[in-house]
Image (cartoon, rainbow, N blue to C red; front, side, top):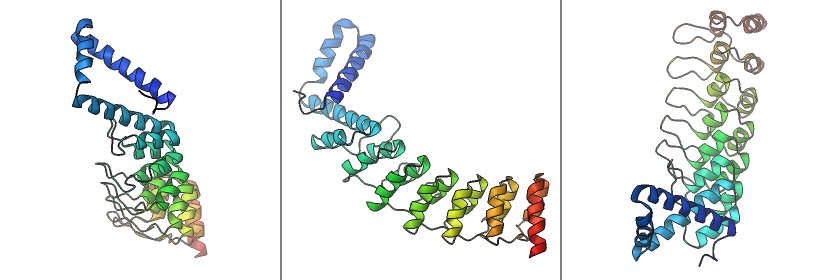
Length: 277
């Protein structure tokens, strides 16, 4: 009966069914378990049970990276919109796990679909640093400017996590470097905050505004790097000509921020840059 399923999936289904039976036995007792299972598989409920098994098999194949199994499950009726207990669809799972081969098998799935958090498959791929998935999604028409509920684009997320390859992939298709999230920051601010110097270089190379002011504080990326002691980022920004005298809303400058946070080596860099300019 299950010849249309791969051997690995059949084993998985058998294991799942065994768990279901054990759970039922714990609730209704040994004698009633068989009767419960038979009733659940009668009439229309059999079709529903089959769909559940197919969908669970698809979710598992997406996680394990078996593109052929994903394609097989879809051919026999698995649903690309199926969700696991965390609310993740097969496409999300494949992007979280970096299973790029599965993306090709799910070419008909909605590449732009968002979770309640606003996360799309592209956001997940960028958060986890899976460049191949990012490239595949972009090639399939994923929205590079889609935002999460807190206003972050895929570029914000890639920069926060220091995934340079993903950053460059996004920049290569024209992702907006000036996008501002609900906290008022650009991807460059985020990269400087976390000390992601490779991402800072990539953004500046793509023309990102090094003087962009935080929407709420007025801080530039240089302010942010100085506050957090990200000396390598400070050096890159200064080499790019960042304004050492930029003033935030509270009147602070990069130098005063570095001083108040005790970053003496950064203070020396700023003082040297100020005398040259």
